[in-house]
Length: 564
Image 1 (cartoon, rainbow, N blue to C red):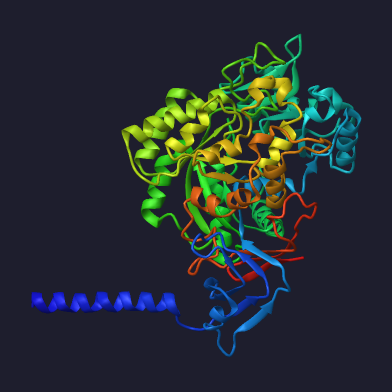
Image 2 (cartoon, rainbow, N blue to C red):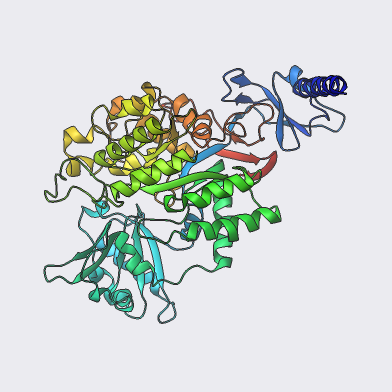
């Protein structure tokens, strides 16, 4: 009986192997459609270039020459002539706050404000027509656009006497409230700054309206929460926006910010993502990260359901914050800010707690990501990661540092040594370039956005936007990483850290997929992976020619998600 069972097992195994090999050569039914007459960059090292690609049931069936791809076509296969256009894998934005971004799309946008007068006028215009006591929310302002002066509530109090106002800075680490909002939240009664944040006060100790990092919760807790319907609409709106930019997958760090509620990201997963996925209405694949405080819950979820909840929703891991941002003066540095000798930045999480929590999550085989912008914060996180790896060594851990913006000398070497991915946002350097020297000095600012140094040491550099800090725009990010030239500048900022267009495109495709542990599903146009790809008007690799590509069409799972 044992011999018969063994023989039967061998036969079944042989059949399974034969079926798999057969599928790889000519897997089943013919292609649904074939794209032809195009240049395809696959991001697959085995077959980097192709002229044709076949798609069946939402996945890539075959890639290569037209004659080779035609072998899997049938009588009903549709041939689509792309008329010489360029095809790349669907872009992956490695760092977004997707639902908050979708909400911001219908709020007051202050990104283009460059004077105090414009600031006041935009707020006045937005407040006009609001019902009394209705909240006005906006985002995107940067004090560096008008010379560095911090705004205060007096800028907007006279034009918002009937409405509470909350306006978050472009980096999300600071916000401005008007007097009405401060009165509603009784901010004057708060005498001490919360851990990991600060209330900006005038010489008399009166709050100016500016709140930093963890202190923002003192105000935002008074703002009405978006309804379930608004959050669901925001996900749909964000998805439509993303595919219009060629983005087919995102790494979503949710609605959690320093001092905020750890529940919101979980609520969005359960009430928004799961709901939309159940309806079959997802158009962008999302890898979700949850607050580090909740790592046992994430571990339990993965144990119960696996990392891949569906083709659309994936559990990424957990995230924490080590510091704030450069623009708000809360990025943590070893030396003081050049323009503020008493300021070294802000450590927004207790270092002992962060170390213990990262180690515990890592031991549970979770993917961990920590926000670090200043050189001291990056050194803290790299040290914590090295300690976790030493205690619980394993391959393929995919530890990430989110931003890795300003590194101390030699820090870039540790990313490669410990196989730590740097998740970076090239378009943010275009803004930071205007004030980095003022805040850090010439020498220290050279450690900013060290893309080339990191790649040269074998590090994985995944690229993204941190939307809504800056817009979702991979093509703009590619250009920023390659040129590093801010608007109005005739020369690049730290030119030795420019990277090739090839590396930049990989940062939004294959490297981004690897950093999110999604490389088996997306990131390259490889048979068996999802048919997520972008049709571009020009080659993205022709940087420096003055000709820049635009998104013509975006395909997700073989379906047209966007057509210009």
